[in-house]
Length: 317
Image 1 (tube, rainbow, N blue to C red):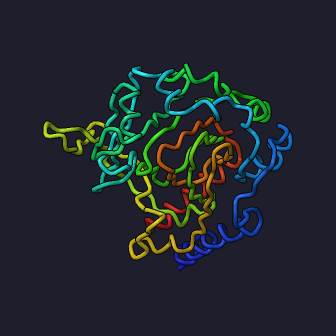
Image 2: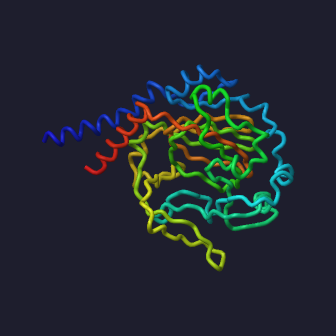
């Protein structure tokens, strides 16, 4: 009896916690700032309380906003071979057929990739430059001078430089499945639009995780894709739910979650705090650069780990 009462109490707390967090801290829409903040202001108002915002006029001085046309990218990067994620359905790093499936990482001339994005060449597959290992500095160093190697006020606020600076360019069919990162993320749109669906960390009790066999898309001889298991790899915890079309019969708890949606337009910057869940879509040919700053593994992280542990425990019981 005592054990049952304790379990009911934990479930009650898990149900109440997200609601209380929303009432105390989260707004129903993402706030806009009309200028980049000072380092102290940004840390106090946004990083410390773990709140997202869209910042305007933070990158208006970047040459990339005017220079990064297709013609310019062809001239500067041109035939250089780069890493491109290729999938049959637009979902890289996502759950499919009860697997966590990663894209084929195809090495191809950048101009050939642009031909596909511009529809000069047709392909049944979906192509996306999205390699997240500081690919801007490692694969596209020719473009760094058109942006910045870091965001100075963010670097000062956090007392560190970014771990990675990433370059993103792809088709509208390319979708980033719902997940979270251990980074303070500044996401800057150069051209086009990015569409974000966000959940605060406090929604964790309503967001399903499962363990999946990792696998990779590989192209077979006839050009079709097959899913090949990475048999020696450990299983990957991932979110199987599509927040745009959630299966509430299978995941009824998700109905209690309260997603926020926003569109980040060219010239705008989204501050996406660490541990926030996010699902991302984009306009066709959208170009973006993001800066990943490692989060502080402080009390905030410990609270999230406790929430995650309690959520998993209640599910098992």
